[in-house]
Length: 324
Image (cartoon, rainbow, N blue to C red; front, side, top):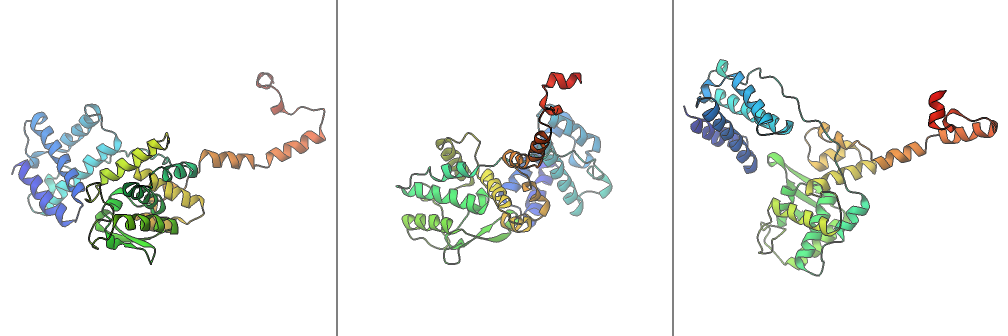
C-alpha cells in the first residue's frame, strides 16, 4: 500500500462521506501529503502502515522547530493524522494495534485570546465608506451591513443565493459549516441596504448569486475579504478589519446590549455554547467605567471631610509611603 493510495482513499471515501466542504478536504489533502513528504525524506520513505508513535512525535517537533508552526497549526496536523489512521482502520486496511495515533499524547492547545472588535464609531465609519452612487458601491455597503448586522461568515455571505434572502419575512438563510443551514433575522436597515442593491443589480433567477462581482459572477470568499479590508483602510481604521472581525464585533455588541449567550450562539451557528462564551468579555473602557463607579471615591471624600488635618496613606507621595 502506498501513501498516495491511502490518502486518495481517505479523501475520496471518508472525507466525502462526512460531507466536508471542499476547502476542508483540500486542507486535509495538503496536510497528509506534507507528512508523506516528511516520511519520504526523513524516514527513509517509510510506508504508512509502518509509522510509529515516535515518528509522529518527531514530526510534531519538526513542525515547531523547522516549519515554525504555531500551536493551532500543529494541533490541526495531529487531528488530521488521527482522523486519517482511524478511517484506514475502519476501512479494514490496517490493524487497530498498528495505528500509531492510538493513545497519542494530547498537544497543548493555543492560548485563547480575546477577540479584537470595532467600536460603534469605527463601524459607522466603515459603513459610510462605500460609494453609493455606483452598483458596486451599493453592493459593498450591503455586504458590510449584512456581515455586521448578522455575524455570518464570509463564505456564507459569498455563497448567498437570491432565494436565500426573504425581504418580506426579513430573514436570510445561510449554509454554514458541515452544510448546516440556519435562518438569521435581519434588521430593517440591513433589509433596506440589501433591497437597494438588489434593485440596482436587477432581477435575477432564484438560484443566481445574490452578490455579483464586477463581471457579474458569484463573489468568492476571498473577494469578500478583500472588499472589507480595502474599505476599512479607506475609512482610516487602523485595526486589521476582516469579515471574521465583523462577526466578533456583531457578537460582542449583542452581549453588551444584554442579549443572552444562547441566542447569540444560534445566530452565529455555533454547535457548542463554549464557542460563544469568549464574547463574555468587557473592554478596557467598560473596566474604567466600573472602577470610576466604585463607592471608594465617595467614601474617601467623607473621611477627608471628617479628618481635614490628617493625611491618608494614599495622599502621601510614593517615596514617603515606601519609607513608612
